[in-house]
Image 1 (cartoon, rainbow, N blue to C red):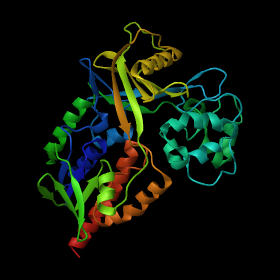
Image 2: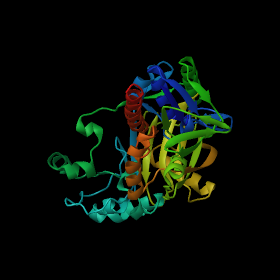
Image 3: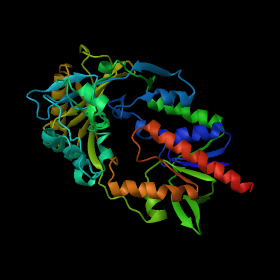
Image 4: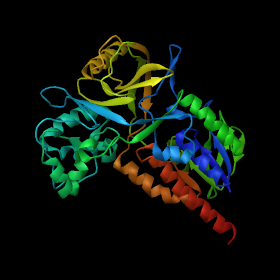
Length: 412
């Protein structure tokens, strides 16, 4: 069967890899000059820096089928939280906000599916959460699942000893309250980073795909169309046919051209600040390590410290609400709170636009149109799922169903 994959990021490459291994005729189309998507490093001041907190999980390594060229490490993280606390809380082993005092959550949740309604269930803590999260967009218009990448789907109350009991007794409490892994008797999960960075990693992946017979076409933007009930793909002057189309890139062209559906939720404007750690820094944690930052007076969202090409580096994700100099001051403030000291060197500031949010109505459109897309042989990229591995699982499951139906129709 002929499979065409649109988008050469992680999910697209994984879909192409698995399809080729199953013996299908695979073509991979990528609009830019190389594979890798958002995982590719930022190049600045003659060096490479991770584009935010990036790593591979066990399931990805298993699907790849190789671990040489990858370095394994325990996936460690923490948080820095203001949000109404009398002083900053810097907590290891928890990526959710760590709040002082007693937990408060609504046992009988308020109706609705918005992020705002979900946060309002935290009672007296809600105003602080809402104040910080509103930088991501209009919370009343966002689906509550958008809180998951914000790390606000659960809260951590280190001083409240009742939380463990509540989580065992109530599904509601289990969904809304967090307990660090080690308090649950668990250790850090293994994770992997490519030795030398993702740029080299995707060069190897590209060669692996070619060795499996995958046709890779770079600089190949695609325009989809629905003509007489058939999906037509056009790339430059060529019309491309396929038994199945896996669309892993921006869903807007697909949804608007084929179904007249437009996604109107605004993107999140961010900045990525990358640079080099002071050579004599004494690290209070093993690296790689990241801290989620919850402070409405600070633009930083996440600070990631890691080693790449033999040097200790950082990547800080921040809201694009301040000038670069002020944003760098905020990063340095967070570094000091995390025990990293000062004297670090900023290499570059990169503005980014992230299409990570969706409304309840858009989610409903995704789900409603999925069955229709599958009937036309289009496999959506699992855009509503959080996490690359979750997206890939959704893609592979749907692709298997589409190909099986095509085989049955061919031999009927």
